[in-house]
Amino acid sequence: SWITWYCSLPGHEFFIEVPEEFIEDEFNLYGLRAIVPMYEEALDMILDLDDENPPPSSELPKIERSAELLYGLIHQRFILTKLGLSLMKLKHKEARFGVCPRVYCYYSPVLPCGMTDIPGKVNVKLYCPRCGDLYTP
Image (cartoon, rainbow, N blue to C red; front, side, top):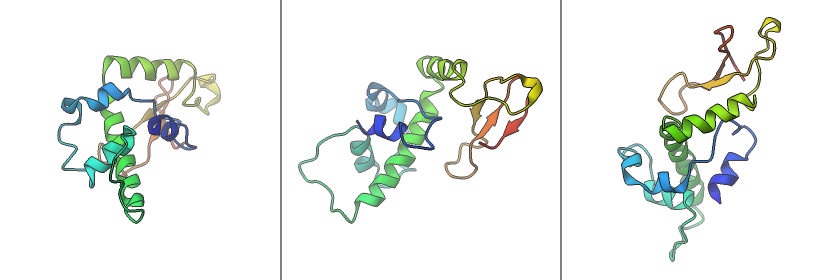
């Protein structure tokens, strides 16, 4: 699926796979149509919906960028749910986000931390709960 492929790309280690049921529920996507250009096409790409009229190949790069933006915004909402939090907790316990570089933190697992809700504004930082510092991955 597109979601599995996207989450497995290098540099996307902080993402978890959002269930399609969450994405298909319009309540969870409220307000995103106004933010994401080519919203319908991007959503179709994320959900791997076969379209009888595929978009022209010249539009594909725009749709791909919109799908990446949309998935990031959906992911941002999903990780605040009970299931999303438990999946992130599991990744944290397994230290899949990395460990603190400080010697006295004894390889304490770090958590990804978004510094703003605005997409593309600031890169994700890593937060160490042991020392309380933020690091650039």
